[in-house]
Amino acid sequence: MPRTRTAEPGRGDARTQRRESVIAVSGRTWTLSRAAVVRAAVATLAAERRSAMLSVAFVGRDRMRQLNRTWKGIRAPTDVLAFALGGPGGSLAGDIYICPWMAARNARALGVPLRQELTRLVIHGVLHVLGYDHPETNGRAASPMWRRQERYLRGLR
Image (cartoon, rainbow, N blue to C red; front, side, top):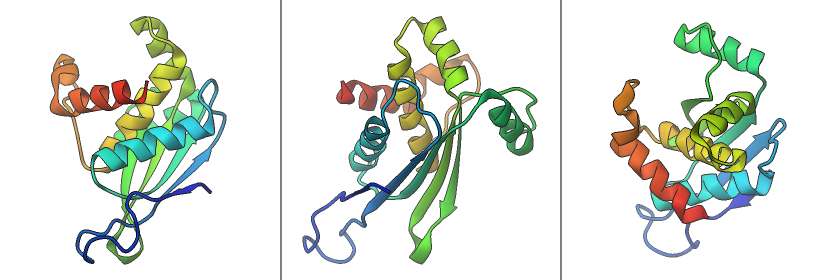
């Protein structure tokens, strides 16, 4: 499991000191390397001045359909689902599920490379774990969360 520090140990007092973020990646990531997944998640956490223990799982269309049905009541696959969890000692933890099949459809529709869309979904999932949300309507691309996500995505290029 890759470990990254989001702040230097011994700097600042106990209230401002950052915990170590831990990012675990599972499943077939397609065109996005595991290192790129970790880099996107860590960059997002660092930009938000947060740390977390995250699991990023790449799942197939059928598994994502099942997850979306169970947790959202929707009988179709989606591109990303994220769940914030309480970690040890009150720390933040979360599970992020990404469907590369849906990401490929989105990438084709948007005319962007699949790698870019998968990175966008990693960032999107991390922001959801951190508590950000967006409307499910056409206005979602104008939401503060979406603008933040796109800024972080541009910073990774």
